[in-house]
Length: 409
Image 1 (cartoon, rainbow, N blue to C red):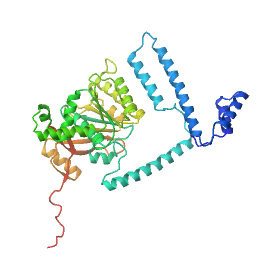
Image 2: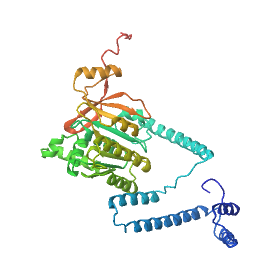
Image 3: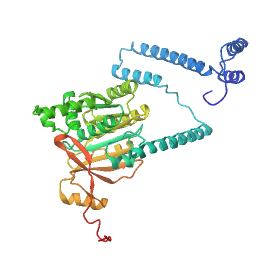
Image 4: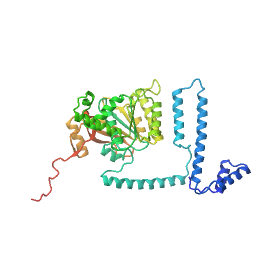
């Protein structure tokens, strides 16, 4: 029925014989009786669902027996046991089917179905965005208009890596992306921080959403009006899809379990990991770049298996480099660097390359790799550190736009 074949009695007999389910005359008579007395075109979907549920129950019983037997092993690695069990039960809960070889007809039908759905969805989004003056997105937005237009958002299965030096806005960038993703738009996200406590995260939200300096929120030196503004900001956060978790001793296994749990319970669209350098080593004796490579590979698989986007923060060296960067580039779909712009001549070079003039900016996002967009692009940013706010620099006129034009007197 799912393949478009009407499940007549003859088709059921053919399928049953092919699969080896019908071997006796009694089996055929039983099927014939069931078909005549219980199944019709009107309730076929109901019975298909019943069969699926019964099959899922049998698979669950098999998993329980399998892991119950494993528990008796005296050399059991309990962390690995939990990870494997959670992965198997998650696959069962999400109806993940076993691997199969598709036919060319199935691939062609799927392609037609996908392009038809994509065109209809795009036209609908385009109409909605035209009314609102926006660009239609396919994934979760970052809040940086130029980057979002280039990539159409962070899509399911995407791995995005953001690198920055110590003290140069990794967490601020992550939280501003979170604001765009789950406060400004209504997506559920999982934010995992390996460095800060939940109190520190909460205070930063207060600054980002209220336009009040972080140091004032930390010290409590607020006027009554500022306090009310901060409270209203937290009420905005209350209605968002922000689900944070602070785990100083994060391991790839813990990350896997937390992400799967959040996908099932909250249907998250984005996972933000802040930051990967604090995760515990997969194996002792590995160099840091090897650790990062293995972790990034596992996160890419996680993004694909769960159908979510993953934003991972990494730390750059003082020279702006990243150990193992080439290997990470191979795994990720989008690699970004957040780089300070401290001198006027650097700003002028960026403006000359972009052939645009901007308000004064102090950082830039450099698109080092983009699988589905142009790479080698710089996007000027304004990073207001006291308020922990990051936004794209606004383009300004040069003052010479009217030169050469005829002006009526």
